[in-house]
Image (cartoon, rainbow, N blue to C red; front, side, top):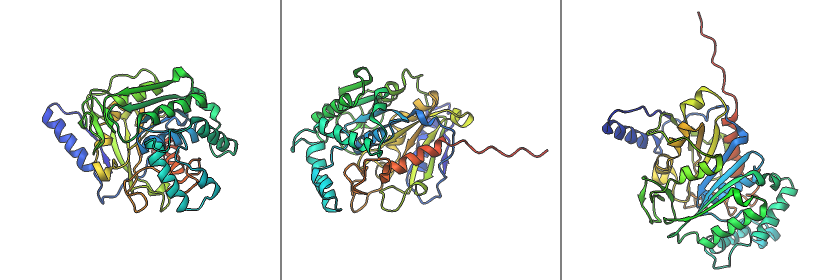
Length: 362
């Protein structure tokens, strides 16, 4: 199912496009498309996320650091933060995942159990790299990483985000490649003019604080960007995620990808994976995270494809969060982890060469 916005001459027409987008991007029983082959540049992939999406962004980035060039982490903690020593000694689900969940809440969002220790977490990452479960950490020396902590964020405390910065420094990301921003806002993705009032930490977790966070993230990762388009001209394609996942891995039935016209016309566009936070999926907030964060408008002018994968709520994951504490599998940090593997398969599909159209009959 595809939504193609068209240029409108009047505000009324633009409003109608927005309304149609909200309807067509909302979850519904209509058949979804297959994720298309676009010929994207795999080695120029990047990722960002809010909250649980930020934790997953770091996990995906570090697992595939050879092909990913940078990450935007909004209200997120360092890699492997929720993993407990007890889980590694006695890796039995669900006992271990319950221990990790406590650590996640009290040691990786709040600091009741103490602040995350970057040195310990870096040692864990090095061990996984030595075992071949993630790419060598040396690739991080070329990454550009953006970090953000909102002044009114009481969900993920500032010391946690500061610990994330220290982790990247120790992992080899140069100081000049790190952007750490403390700014307005609660626990939310920050925009210039989309979403709820600034400072709120509630649905849809997108806040208008007169700050273009999408531009800040993409500009930091890829360098100077061309101005955003005044209105989107590409396609929001709703695609079937089951092709890339297995039952129990936490994914919703459908995801969304935004494809600018230029990326249909010629290969080589870059993929940015934008990961929603807890309680921020299409099922929860409709198209807000997809349509109002500013990513699509920037994608049009800057040869970017924006992938918006979706997580579903379930008995083990009632808030619809990404798996950064092991609810899908205790092997949740490496390339073969259920959600990381599925996400990368989606990126690889976008990187496949598009099928050639058959020649026209004379």
